Image (cartoon, rainbow, N blue to C red):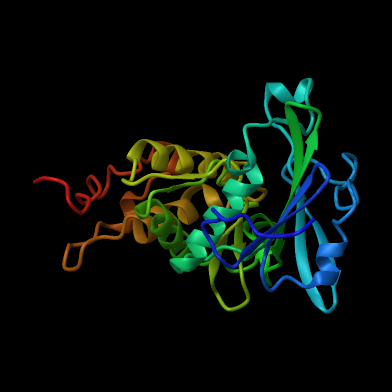
Length: 275
């Protein structure tokens, strides 16, 4: 049976149910692409082909897509590889991620366009899921570092700050989830478990940056350790106010000693906050 749920927040979305399978999709998604996921488990990659954090690429009718299966991480993955507790369609992980992607794109944030999500009920209490997004041209930050490509660290810092200023909390910000396009645009990927707050939280912003810093420390070559992170934070994420005298470059420190807000003071007050 097909049809659209009456309470869908985005009118351009559709939802189809076949047995215990739900397919959420953008209205302009080709019918031939939807048909690939019409039967149970057809669109799901095997665990050996698509591990957590990885994605597979799909070319269909001249367009390229990214397919990601949802896998558990941390200690739960020792017992449950890819099954989640069913609390309803609107509380499922692919619904939340697809909705957040659509909202962020509506606000002009650089994220991949969501295409479709698949949710398979498994018994009374569980489900497995997949997400398909449009593939963006370019390469990941991790790949750019390994191939010694020129990197706009200031642009990366500014892009991350845009998300944080709008209350977007990326749960796994790392060098793989930062995407650099040939046009010089910086995009963020993989918003599973991400959330949005009405007000920006410095705690979660700093935690996200620390996660990114640890990811950069693991990259080969050491290029990110001093100068790259210094530029990303000081000139991109926390730019100096106009007219403020600059500090001498001789006093540059490693990011291991760098307090995220220490050099430039605290963040400016949020709109609507007092004093």
